[in-house]
Structures are given as structure tokens and as C-alpha cells.
Length: 325
Length: 168
Ligand code: SF4
Image (cartoon, rainbow over all chains, first blue to last red; front, side):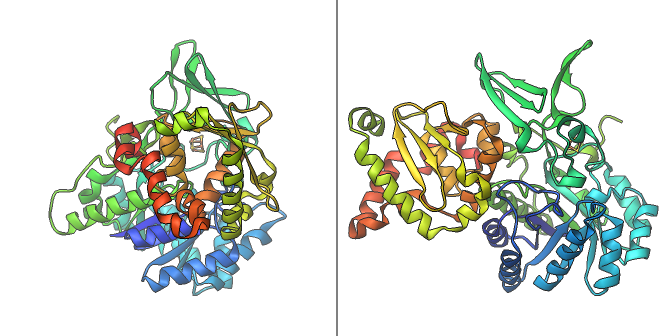
């Protein structure tokens, strides 16, 4: 199984390459990128230099152009595709059918991956992308159990990639309106969920209070592990009491599921976190590289190595086990 | 901590002069920091090492970046980042992940989060090593002084004990 690693900057890409990535995914510094954060991402020249560096080390670079093209401005997405192809991208990761159509027509030789943001969660949807746009791989949304992933893999004629570590988006990959409602900005249109521009933190009687726009998202007692003020991971007061209405602030860690994912026929394993620092990327990539070596050698895989890097300092196997069923 | 005692009793002006020399060096060696900061080069950042009785106001202006040493932070700041000195320095040289330090409550941030995120990303990409690059201009004295500074700020094992070791 290939290890697909995140990079938000050229330096992070170099660290991911050095730590044992088989491929690195990254994007341009604009709204074509679902991690459109301040100070993050690649200029056109940085992308070309970084791809050349990765290729020298035998590592692939996958360019994420994975937001939905805005009516009247599709040329921004088209030029991102053209520039990724020119820079030598090994694949483009795309969510929007219009952009996929552009890739298939204009650059028929370019390898195309279906982004997780496309939320292709069943064989019919995946077959559509394969048949229509010659997609070679689909990144599966983080809502499927391992048996479901195995069943899909048997029915489709393309590679499957799944997330194994990092932040979770519970509502089928950005297809929720919470962020749009609270801030006017959404992951699939603007590349940001619960954006930094709307976040406020303040200390109140020893508690850390996080707010997004007009809403209080959480209050953390002194010493309690904190989390991003992402709307779906807030602790809200309701008439039934207060608590995490949608999801706890926790990160996916599928280390223990690696043997099952391998048996399910998964071809690539993805680490989330292009917005994280080099320290995170180096350590998570190195840890999973060691885990995959142990898996291949039939040795026990060390687990729970990465809790300290996780949101809320806790981890979950998410939908892979679906223990709530 | 000897550094805390020194910071309490010594005048701040010489430190400020030294830090601005270092900032000028860093500016010429890492111009990409300013590209990544974008419009945030006009912001005023408060940097507050919680284990020192002093703090810093950073104005990362592209043409004339400036750092001011203060006994306590003024109110007219755009953003504030506070935490142990070793955590603040560890974030800049890639030893620690800033988000993990935030989750573990080792660092505190407030104010304009876009400015904070941009600064974090710009510095993380730059691979600036504040301690070693700050003393480069000292020529042959650079290496021994860097060693002394590192021992004052805290070695990685000391950081591990502080509970920030798992941060990255
Ligand atoms: S609020 Fe949560 S579920 Fe909605 S897009 Fe953001 S991360 Fe996904």
C-alpha cells in the first residue's frame, strides 16, 4: 500500500519525502485548494521546484485542485490544472465534475484521482467518474466501514485510497452548511471550514473559550485538551443539556486497522494535515512508514504513538469499525 | 531560571538592539517569510514567553521589520502568542507542531487568528533556526554562544519533561 502524505509548504514536502512518503499531496495558494489557509500552499514556481525535488527521490506528487469551480470563474480551476500538468504532477486530485471533464478533454494523458470532497461513497458514483473521465483512483469518504470498502473495491475498476490519520469531517466531506451558515465560507467553495478569519479565543476565569463568528463553540477547563473551533466538533448547550452534538473533537488513527485495510484491497493510505507544521508531518509520516514496514514483515505494529499530535489529544477508528451500529 | 533573573534585572535596550540585528539577518536570509505573510506583514504580534518577565512586540514589515522588548505587552496588538520560551522557539525550528502545543494547552493564542496562522506557516516553511542564525554575525564566537543559549532555553529532553515533548 502506498503512503500518501500531506504538505502545506515546500519545506513540509521535503520533510515528508525524507520521512518515507511514497507520494505527497499539496495544492496551489488559492481557492482551488480545499486547504486555502493563510500563509499555506505553493506558488507555481514552488510547485515545479518541489515536484522536481520529490521526483529526484522517487516520490510522486499529487496536486489537489479539489474545491468546486465557481460559476463565472472556472478559468481559475482550469489554469490550476494546466499549471499542475506543466509542473509535472503525477496526478491531479479533483472533486468537481466540470473540472474533471476539463482534465479528461484537455489533458487526456494526465492521471486523475477523485478527491474525497467528491464524496463518491458507492460503486455507481465511482463507476461514473471512471467511465466518464478515466479516473484511476478514488479517495473514499470517511463514512465507510472496512467491509463496505472491501465490497466497493470488488465492484469498481479503479484504485481505492483511504484516510488513516488526521482530522475528520463527519458530514460526507464538506457537504454540510454549518460553516457557510456561521461564516459565509465553506470547505467546498472557499477551501476553508470554520476559517481562521472568524475564530476568536479568549481566557475567561481560567477557561479557554473558543468562538467562531457569533457562536461560542467550546469552553475548555484549565488543563483540558483543547480543539479547533470547528462547528461540528463544538460543545453546545441545548434544552437537553450540553455536550458534543455532532462529534467529539478527536482525530482518526487507523493504525490498528492496517491489516484489515490491506485485506480489503486498499491501494493507498492517506494522512490528513496539510495545515499542520513540519513537526507533525515528519513524525506522522515516519510512524506510518515504520508501521507499514512492520506490517509487510509480519511483525506487530506499534499503536497509539501519535495521540499527542491529535485534536483533543484523543483518537478514534472512526467509521472503519462503526461500533455504534 | 538564570535567563528570567537576567531579564528582570538587566536593561532592555541592549537586548533590543541585538534582536533587531538578528531580525535584519533573518530578513535577508529568509525573504519567503514575507511572501507567505502577505498582508499580515502590517500586523503587530505580541510574543510572550511565560517563563520570562519580558515580552516582545514583533512587526514583521517587509522593508523594516522591528522587534521591541517590553516588560509587559501593550494592548494595541493584532495577535498574541504566549507559552514557555522553549515551546515558542521549538515551533520556529520545526521541533514542535504549533497545533499540538495548542491542543495540549502549552501555548495560548488570541487576537487575529488569520495573522497567527500566517505567521506560523511562514516561519514553519522558512526553516529559520532563531538560535543559530541569531548568533551567526558573531563569527568565531557564534558556536560557543549558541551552545550557551541552547542550554539556557532547554534541551529537547528538558522539553520532553515539560509535557510538550509529545507535541512533535
Ligand atoms: S463543520 Fe464539520 S462536517 Fe461540516 S464541513 Fe466542517 S469539518 Fe465537515
